[in-house]
Image (tube, rainbow, N blue to C red; front, top):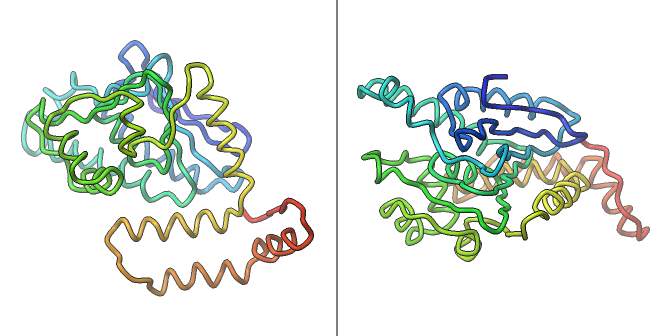
Length: 259
């Protein structure tokens, strides 16, 4: 694993940690480049059902490591190459079939917020701060991440975020739909743990199929297609469907085996 990232398996949960607490978990070029590899590893591992991303210490991430910009983004070609690596990380996270969760405390700013928006779920500790700050750097935010942000919180809030570069607190983030929920200090880990257990107990065929369909909708698809029909057909003919119906009729919890 590249310096600054830590990955571990915790039962059915993969845990990716930004591990530069002395730098507020600023994301280096190498860290951005390694994220797609982690995503591919989680997707390929049949024992893992959920990816949880968090930050070491007091912060999720204060954003990209700007100290690298003079070397890596000093020319137009360098900036384009850097942005391609960032887009690769965002694309990998957003395209996951397995659900991803951003577990946020402290600063979740710039590239850190970009990563959290690419995840399926965001849960924050009270006291967390959110912002996306390209307007402070003379950068125009990329299309993919802008589309994700607009889809999540709407154009008015996205404009506020991107054009002002101002930060908001966790309560406001929940109010505008940026985070799914907020929790008191000290309870975030337990609350996210309970939610991951819920996800792991559900039909993985259902979760991954529906996650794929949601992704297609966010990408601009307005109608179902052959892939959607194949996903739904495979589910209805699968073991999870038979078990789910049987469990409902027998008034017991289902025991899904699909991975």
